[in-house]
Image 1 (tube, one colour):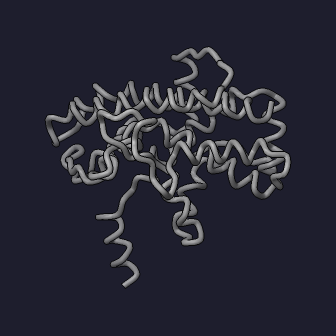
Image 2 (image 1 turned 30 degrees about the vertical axis):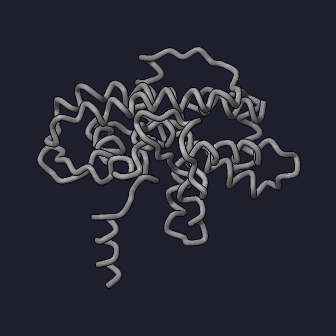
Length: 254
């Protein structure tokens, strides 16, 4: 019976919260690790007891199996219409990704937060910045961010969300450390000082990609051509996610 329930979940469950898959999240965490200040790194090491940002980047997905953390489910995504601006959209009563990131920042900056609370919210923050930079995490409510848009990936049944979550990354056949090395070598980034208003700008910027993904899907049999046309964007967003996470962490701790 237990195996049957697991199978049903895998076939029909909403996987919005497994954005990027482990490899993508670890890429974002490791890029951030390599771009935070010395002071920020020292403060984080104290909170995480020596664990790295890549180590803890998938924690927010791991706790989904524990119903004590059900209230954090909606924090992994934002669902709003393609033509909407986030600021004008109807907000979820349970919270969303924007609210979650701000909450994590508030806890981490607060002098009254204990180390346990800081560790928990730091783990969430690292994951959520990764989530933010996967465009289908800002998808439509009716198809659950592409989870209900069925496609074939090299002839195998899957959904559009999964293609962007992990299929293209897995097809690249690189470990997260190899991807980080190649991204850091091939791309440049000018570090900026983070401001809270940047979150709105990032959401609307990424939502443009969300629109393009939905509107350009004219064939549900996907493979080499789709990978060729879209994987550069995947790499750009992973790279941006890592550097933006570093900016936020420096804002909190430096």
